[in-house]
Amino acid sequence: MNIQIFGTKKSADTRKAERFFKERGIKFQSVDLKEKGLSKGELLSVMQAVGGIDALIDTECKDKQTLAMIQYLVPEQKLGKLLENQTVIKQPVVRNGKQATVGYEPEIWKKWE
Image 1 (spheres, rainbow, N blue to C red):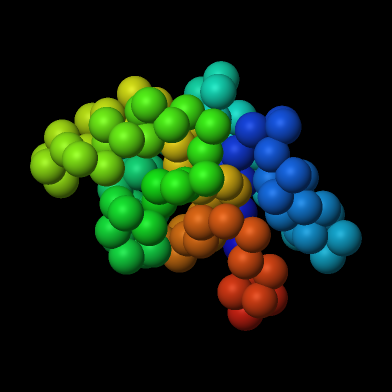
Image 2 (image 1 turned 135 degrees about the horizontal axis):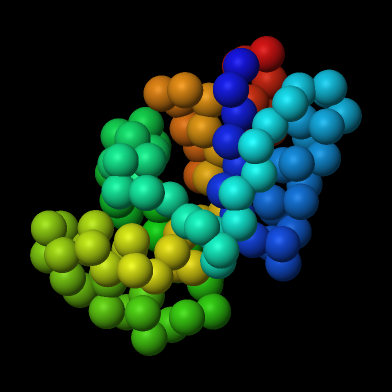
């Protein structure tokens, strides 16, 4: 298993995801979205795994202005704007190879074990 957890230190769900894998003795790589973020290839891979760009967007995020702008862009422009403003992505993004989840999804992660 090659687990990557993308999120921020302030995200409670990201901390819960890290705890989930620690408690099971599963090694993971933690990536802070504010410092590094997802590359374009990683973002495309996650989009494909979760069912598209709209599944990635956190409608409850604090940056309402960016959220409103992204929601009204055409799909081709959404990707670029999402890469620039990764704080509107639902957290955590957990990747295991080609599989990925967005948000706190312990039931899905249990199936990966």
